[in-house]
Length: 349
Image (tube, rainbow, N blue to C red; front, side, top):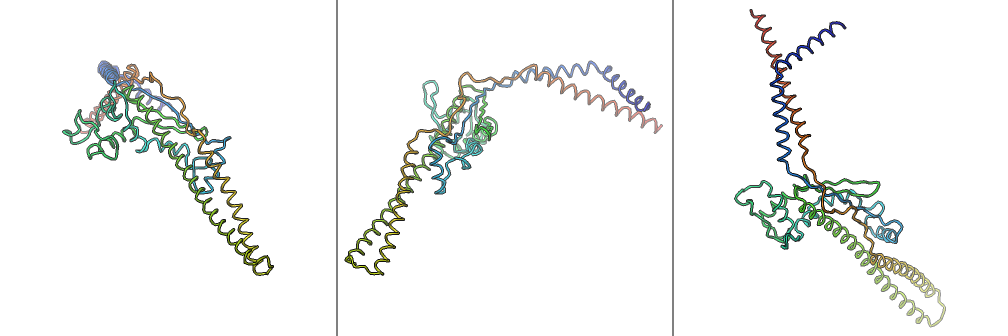
């Protein structure tokens, strides 16, 4: 135990002596690290953060649940209960090409000039590093008004911007308990960040509402066709029953009586089916007319946005600490190597 304490004390005082002998060198390197950290913080651009949330309302407590149950009976899923539209789906939708491309190709007003948002993005953020340089220069801009008419070079640039936004500038957090999807947008230009957030919200809501509306209209179309089909069959059966009664001329015959009973039963079933289908159709039409946004916007982005600038004290501290550790490690290793070489020389002598 005493030998271990002795060895520890020996190593400690040995390292302390190394520090004292090289104090100027260590301080010099630490100061260089602090200066580099402060310089880096001054060069690093200020970023602007826009935060907003989308709330997925399942429609509980409203007539929508009845409609969703009706839709499920036909194999459609509109996002209620265990449906396909969940916070996870909305989060995946948010970072999809469909939504981000729609945002990039939206029109914005820049000092009285209407332009595509993607060109406003390029004006402020700059072009990604792409080859060939002679094509993707500082003046290169998107001329096409939609993604379907993009040229090869435009398509390559748009895809690179999409990846840049998805990986670096847009983050999505979801809450399964509250059905709230939180979005954070971070760029180095306040106006570009704000416009992206505003257009992005419109793109997500527009897609969701269009999808829901199309599903509702599809259900209405199915129910309408089904009603027409049941009604046409019902009319045929009623004509058959009337014709059979005329043939009997009110004379009771067992065979004809049996046919009449069968037709009457079929007509009764068809009448029930027709009544139920008409009821469902009216429910579907009523629900379609409801102005109930199931995807609500919380915490809309507002100017001025939150600024995220580099703190020179923190960066200076990190730089100084990093350089201190590097030079200290170098000195300790160097001292150990010198001692090992001395021992080797003594053995050889």
